[in-house]
Amino acid sequence: MKRNALWKTLGASALTLSLALSPAAALSVQAADAPTDAKQGGEEKAKAPKDEVSIPVWGFRGSLDGAKIYSVDVEWGAMTFQYVDSSASDKVWDPDTHEYQPGSGGGSASSWHVYDSENKSVASSDQTSINQISVINHSNADVKAAFEFAGAGTPAAAGEFTVIEDPDEGTTKDTVSGTGKAGIKIPTADNKKGDKADQGKAVTGKAYFMPTGNYPALGGTPTPGTVNWESLGEIKVTIDADSATP
Image 1 (cartoon, rainbow, N blue to C red):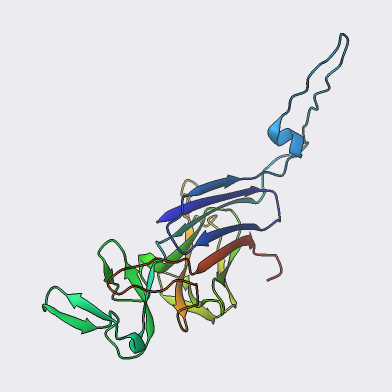
Image 2: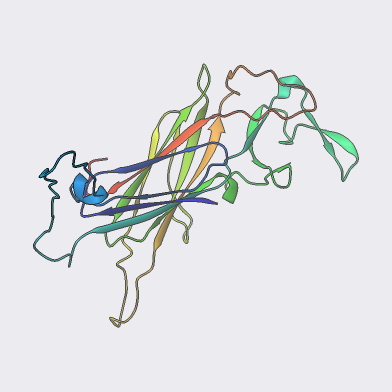
């Protein structure tokens, strides 16, 4: 899985990342609520004798004890999918039966399927590591994650999210289709129990994405016997404090 690390200290601003529906490089983003000059430092050129250069010095009074420290990892699978078009007589060679099968999905209707590009086959489920987004909360505060899909093409590609509130229990929070936004609350990692020496543990929320509807008009023309990968769009994940307005 690809991974993004989002960090925020003492702030209420939402942190947003976007992931395209194709393999993408991991990214690490770090932010702190210090003045801009304090984050970057600076430089200035003296151009004549007795020129002065002023360097700002920053500080704050107080303690970070009790501060809300936000640290959230977002991980996602390859996000690769296959559309089986029943009207196009899609057929795929099955090396086990030595014959062509009618469509990779095994059904007569047009449909989307999670595609395992490593094994070059359709996945057996629509909830796999391939189409999974994991949001891992290491913060000492509850956080919210919002998932939104912006489809490519005209008309645009559509999709839906199935959000799992408690992966250990398998509880489904909600499924949002089309251009809707799915959300989930992820509890704090400040959850240690018993002796003070015990440590808390990160808490994970999960969402699964599936394209829906017909294959979008992206301008490409399928060539029989070949695979032409096209970008279906982009998923935006927004991490926010749980106290923020949905």
